[in-house]
Image 1 (cartoon, rainbow over the protein chains, first blue to last red):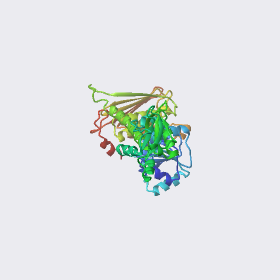
Image 2 (image 1 turned 180 degrees about the vertical axis):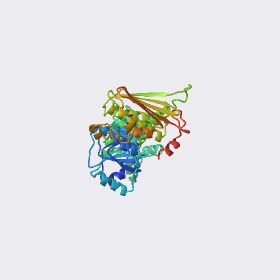
Image 3 (image 1 turned 90 degrees about the horizontal axis):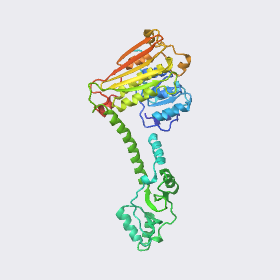
Image 4 (image 1 turned 180 degrees about the horizontal axis):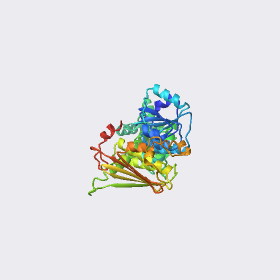
Length: 119
Length: 326
């Protein structure tokens, strides 16, 4: 699924202008703890989060995240959007909550790209 | 796609019309006939001809294929071209940005615009094809710039002879500087990718360094510094600070153990996973700390097999195949 299609499944609004919407998303991961994301996420995932600070973008960049979705209609501050534009990571906001979003994307065929943290 | 469209829009504001237009313009003068128009269009495979004054080369009118068709329908090719030429001219200036021309194309539906210089003399012609070609050329140039950077960085060590060559990157990290948190790791990751590191290695170094960088921001008294020593077959990351130090290193290493405040947790950190993450990303990890003196963290990443950075060996295909780590 590419990001353009993904936006349709979640009634999403794209917040970044310089985004490559043809990028392929291989699965998803949902978390508000960035350390959990760094520890568990696999490449090319879409990240569902309620956290809006610029660290989300940094975390995404380090872990090769394809796009970030802010849950419950959250809108990140401008500094987060600026950093995402700079790093070319699409930011999307969706009115749905984390649970509903995970369900929608899972039903649409996206697998989980979270691996267990305990070895 | 949207990314490239935005870049195209941006380019339309950067590129001047003079950089994109065709400057070899075929022109005719008011004494020519429609027969001359027909031949000129056929020979040069063009669809519009500016008509200029023979003496001062100023633009008088335009004849397009549509005008020619009207003429042919009247079986009137022997007539003077002035009978069919358009004199209501829409022109652009060579020193304007491309976006001005795009607006005019959209507004008028015209296929070509004569381009005038500062003095108002005809200097070129701009078709939609010229615009497309000009934008593609500019995009290609952008792409090549990054390719050149990658090429230069990936061959950094190749021509330098020593018993042991390494490149050291140094970064200063300020305490509680959340605004720039991760900026150093971000630069390090990009540098490694340019030097030819495969995606998985760059990711491991990036995540490990990011956790270390956040630790310096969150847990130190005066911040600290990160040094990265890059050698063709090994990358070492050193993060050190001058306090306060860790009371019990073994306890700090336990997953879930954290001394972070509620404020830090609200930022998405302080889950007690940082050091655990670091040890999983690095091939070797060493953490030494003394209360009141500070903490020294060393991460080593070993490149195996054909993988190498800065010596230009890593092929593109290999990078692709190693993109998905387990």
